[in-house]
Image (cartoon, rainbow, N blue to C red):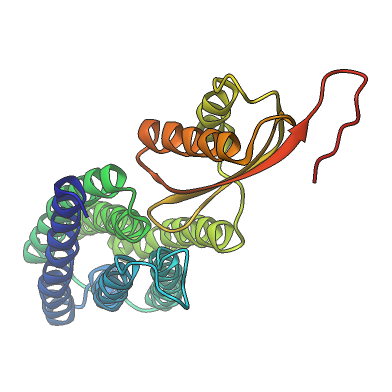
Length: 307
């Protein structure tokens, strides 16, 4: 492993540990303040954060597994462990969203709790903290192409939505209490319902992305086009019979079949395949494995055989 990869691994590990410790601290803060002052949206957000602790731990374990080198049982590496971790986070978000929505609806049927500035302060602290965590983990996740870290960043984003809704809801409740506006006193549980919807929407997006990778969906055209152009640029390649590429966690595996002049020797064919592999890997650091299959190519009018 080169120094660049080692540095990326250290950054990823630091980001995921920072997320884990932060989630534990915020869970304690929200649940204690929420329970003391009867804030439904803060309690729901605290439970969501408790789920985040589990989800972040799952992401940490999956990231550790994904960094293991290929072995006899896993010749393509362990990259998909991160995708499984992302899927677990999506499931946790779905459960948290349902929990938050259910209890917020119940709170609407009860007399409103008196809002507190301390509850508002806890919401503001959570909002600022989670916004920083989202930007920090997303930046490193995209730089290292870590599915687990990007999923953790989206989890932080769900918390940003939750904290923003909590701050607005608690603020409206404070205004309602001060001016005796009955409908505003229910700002807290209404905000909880909105948060639940946003969290569920984000969870579905994350889950679909994880399923696409696990089902080995082809990478998108924007990623595929540069790889295709690199293969076309090899002078000996006369025909591209097939090109496929799929994500395998934090790296990409490419499979290409090309036609080269049939009269070339095995050694020359080997050198061409090596040239294709090196060209793709040098220009695209996310590509770890390139499998090249060579088919014979004949001049027009001659027999064409490829498989």
